Amino acid sequence: MTTTEKVQQKFARLLAEGEDILRRNGWNGQDYQRHPDDVDYRRFRTEALNLTRVVCGTDSDHYRELMRIAEGKNTSDNSYYFKDCYGALQAAHRDFTDGFLFELRALVAVEILGDFIDQAEGLLEAGHYVAATSLAGAILEDAMRKLCASRNIPVPEKTKIDALNAELGRAGVYDKLVYKRITALAELRNNADHGHFDKVTQDDAADMVKYVRRFCADYVPRGGGP
Image 1 (cartoon, rainbow, N blue to C red):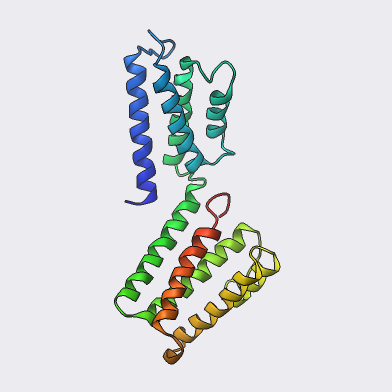
Image 2: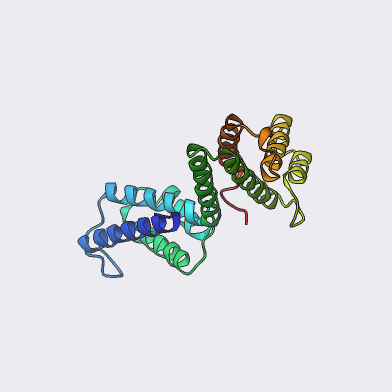
């Protein structure tokens, strides 16, 4: 199941639960027969906050409205405002369905990179360590491009790892140890791509794939970037 499908499923489950709570408490669009249970109110609000934070971001109107309710002196412990939490979640779901993906775009990008890293690990397990090295190098280059974009560092379309590394190092995005490690990985990838198989070992490939996975986890932007 993709990240998008998981989010859609989460929205559907939480909205259905909210609708059921409103119905059980006699909400007619204007008032309740009785206020929702306090435990239901806090739990639903917390889940709605978590979901809108991931999908819409902390600067979104949806998240801010839910935070306003959660922190308000007159609203945080008043389950009358369950309806307002439900409405904010409905609005977030509508924007999501209409294609306004917000921070989810970055999550999907990370998910795609993760899928490719899984493929590189699969190549390693099958003994195709040169191919795994080439793929890991391509993943690293793509991750570095995303990192440059998130820092507004302009790079030419055909720029390779070494040039990206120089720009990111110059901008202080990471330290000299990371810079030196990426320089070595760029050379390893180059050897794999140009058929210098005597300069690529299975241990080198395994270390590279492992490092690229960690680099993506540590540096690929998960929100606020393209």
